[in-house]
Image (cartoon, rainbow, N blue to C red; front, side, top):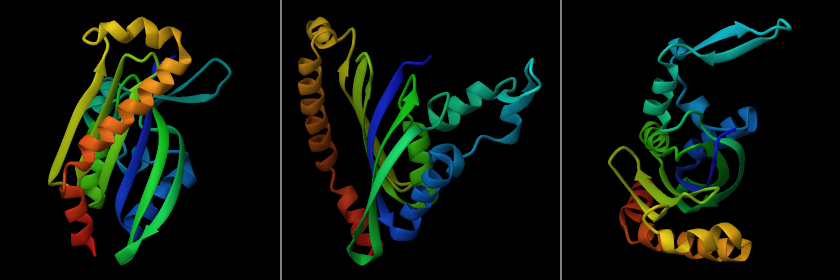
Length: 195
């Protein structure tokens, strides 16, 4: 069982591109592995004891997933809401999980492929780390950590033992990450260029 990384991401761009993300979620329960798929040689099918086929990584497949997405798997348990924006644009606000680490590498590839922008705030369930990622099309991305276990040791025990303290910390961390993300005017210029 992996340590899950929870994400709250917002995708911005032309409505048809944002709907492509929504359609992948509707059809498959997630978007990343369907819009940015692994190459066929990354996986193989084995037959388990009761004769059931099971897809597994082929030799080197795990490394391909890390290179392509930044994590072993794409997103899962994905939920979303979509909002229309002026100029034929839309925003998809999604909450999802990834295994062991953020999927910022995959999100950057998705932004480049679909010419969309994303802001992503993420936290690991322990919490071992809390961070943010932003990308605008293929042209620009930035990332940072708000909290890193082992560096920010003073808060570790309090956050692990007190759910209210953890919720309060995550709310403050998300606000700080959003402020950092929104300092960048590239996202707004990107949306203006799409209109």
